[in-house]
Image (cartoon, rainbow, N blue to C red; front, side, top):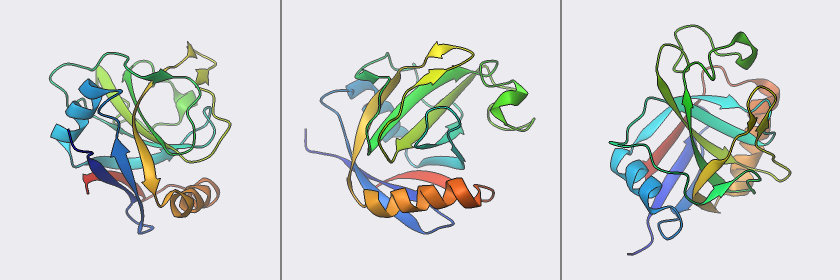
Length: 166
């Protein structure tokens, strides 16, 4: 199979990077994401994992992918896929408003981009939270990391994270 690429963008900031799907390491996850593109929604900056931005969306795969190519220590440029039950993210400590994608659903998909080092996927409420590494940024990570830092400092309100075929 030829390499497949997607565009990951912070739409309001007009910043994007290019990622390559890891079809050889996470084929089921890559197939599910690719078939569902474009995907996106409100962006959040991680509270616990450190250098991560993500969006929460409704499930889109016919069957949730298994934990293929897992990590608890994502590196800069990793795209990760997580699945959570709505109750796992439903407490006020996570900061999601009532009516957001994290509330009122039995399952929520988290598509994340890690933009810097020293990430650890552990949650005080749940323990280790392994993610599926399904893509890697191959171009534009520096610009995206700068925009992610701006998002951390200036806020995420009104910003969206999008994934589209390149």
